[in-house]
Length: 207
Image (cartoon, rainbow, N blue to C red; front, side):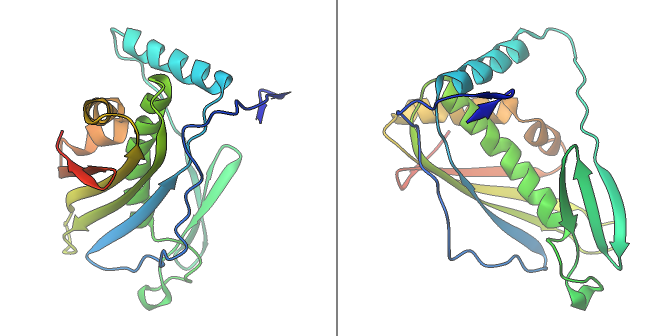
């Protein structure tokens, strides 16, 4: 693992394994989008230190501190767009039947995936910071929206499945705190109905 130009050895203890869903099908356009997100969790001393430092910094803030994400976007052809964030780039597009070239996910799929991934990132960070071992974590995110002119999203529904030896109260605490730590969740909950259905080791967990 390379961090800040230095090679770091990973700890032999991990909090999870790589998760891959080979049966996942492409997202189709329609009244909502369903996105499957798989998360790999590995713990090593430097990662824990970085996560805990950022966590402590955020909790210590008493006044607003504004952060910024800049995305540069350009039209490639038809409805095919290329977006760049620093050294990374990604494509958005629409299927041919909607005027696109079919070379990427539609913008709303990125929107749903981004919102859900933001929340899962907080789950992962909190698990690392609290030394909670997660064997796996997956989520299906759905966003339902009104397609009329002037329409908007009606709700966002997350189904989060966690496998872990941790007790239910520990995972509940992480779930509650993750929502408070997630910028996307805190923004969306003010304008649309947000629902999270959480399962731990296959059992529904209320929180």
